[in-house]
Length: 227
Image (cartoon, rainbow, N blue to C red; front, side):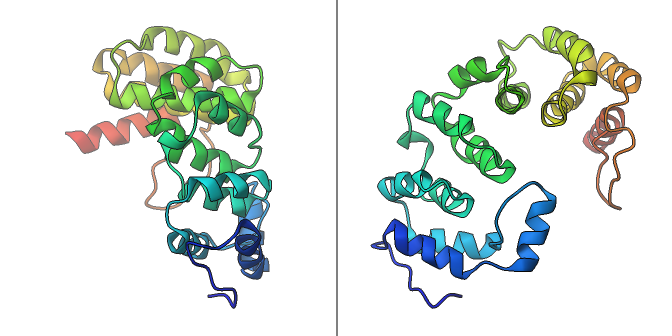
């Protein structure tokens, strides 16, 4: 895979060199279409993380480099219990690359004991990227632990704000809208109605075999699969 041998004893500098050796113009072109800024194939990146094994200290060193491939490896070789709420908050505020932010929220924050505290901290943050992460954590609660979540209030806010929200935040709010409609029979009709009126992602190109992200279609399709 690479001429640079990676072992659990490898240093951050050695990991960075190994990642740099994996730079592929074709992978970069694909990644850049999704807003990412590196050319490392993620399967090969995961293989490096597997060779390193769990290493929270090295993860912090790799994160501190600021490089996206290094940060992705850092998230793979550490875990939710390795970070305080303030550390996770600082990490998210410094994560401007979509894949890094996505892995941080999904692999670390959602599984952290600090998830609810951070959800509340980020939900109405003026930075739409942080607010989007707050909405993602809220959607996770809607699906997995809805008790204590005011879904009517969420629909009120989605109805009032989603149409004019920045794209990244709009996607997060739309997912919450869809999941409320999928999981809550009593609110399903209202969720579909909001989606129909706002028309967010109604024209989004959807590959064959995939479900449209347009909430009314998404809700209807997923509910039909549950029948």
